[in-house]
Figure 1 (cartoon, rainbow, N blue to C red):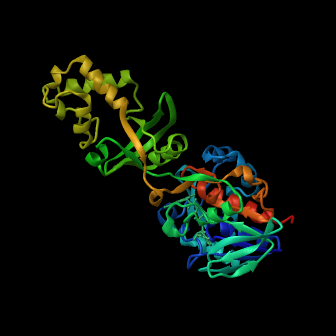
Figure 2 (cartoon, protein in one colour):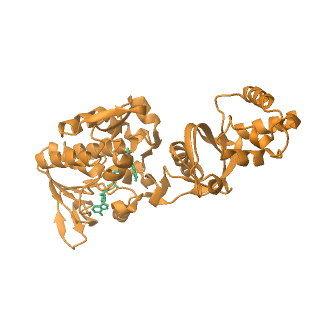
Figure 3 (cartoon, helix red, strand yellow):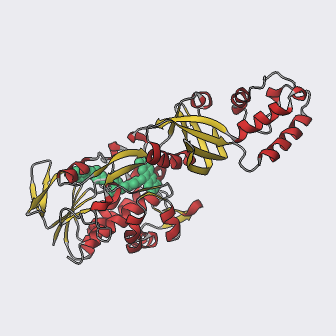
Length: 410
Ligand SMILES: Cc1cc2nc3c(=O)[nH]c(=O)nc-3n(C[C@H](O)[C@H](O)[C@H](O)COP(=O)(O)OP(=O)(O)OC[C@H]3O[C@@H](n4cnc5c(N)ncnc54)[C@H](O)[C@@H]3O)c2cc1C
């Protein structure tokens, strides 16, 4: 069987390897001048290839359509990926949070290993080849059309053209147009794992300030749509950092572009009562100081004026003049600092795309389209996305492998 794979990212390379492993003649067409352009920038250039966790933990980290990937993950899981990369000469190590990286800390070694394996398995790789359409005959796939006007005939096509985040890497959403022309439904793409924009000026005032060990809650009406613990970073437009990126995926899923409330707990390890007792102790030790000089032990210096303003207590007030009500208002602000989320940053800053090919139109055991026999999908172009930690690449590897090996029985 002659198979054409469109898109030489993580999913496309894996699909090509799996299809070639079944003895098919495989051609991989990538529009860029090199394979895996996005892989080079993953994990800040170190590529967090996967997460060395149990299956249950993997599925817990999937944000959209977790059930759809059960079969793909079981068919080619994180351990299978690690084995394959090591076989290709890329030694791996596991870091905090089970995140797996190349020992060399170079993302390029991941692509190098995969390229070597593609070569070994006889996959023909053509660069600067953009697929613009998939041809069909009697409703089944018969080939592809490239931007150069070439009509390439084949028996099956695997589309692995990515989402539309970081479009400079080549993931420009073009593959969805091809799928749409063949009758597929595209769930509208949204930027996910992205910073959040705030209505208030906190970002501008606190730009560059990182807060570790805080908890964050997103509240839409009366419903909590996300709750997590970790690190946030103030930026000129709002907030970012690992905790915020995770929160953003649930924000875009539940209430994209709507104004919602974000509540920060700056002292999650303490209850209101414990924090009040701590303040009583701190205030006792600095009873003759002005309020603005009494919070050094509790908060980073830059945060103090902002929280003082939030508390409504005059900064020059003597600490021994602060009333119980005022102190409790301060506790309230520290435990429930409320801000307004107005939206997310765009695709150019989104680590992943939420939305894509409707999974109901794809067979989860093979990744074959239910509408067009011989057409397969893999990777971020599917309506599947996950949190950070190596889970998105694992989705690309698993669905890519599933698509390539889905051709094995044919
Ligand atoms: C900054 C950043 C850091 C990230 N870090 C991590 C991380 O450390 N760990 C993790 O798990 N995930 C990470 N991700 C997410 C992860 O990189 C993606 O989810 C994953 O690369 C998706 O793989 P893919 O093969 O589906 O798509 P892509 O990697 O987008 O590959 C698609 C390929 O198809 C090509 N293409 C597009 N259209 C056509 C066409 N018509 N014809 C031919 N070729 C075409 C593109 O040029 C591209 O090379 C990160 C993402 C970003 C943006």
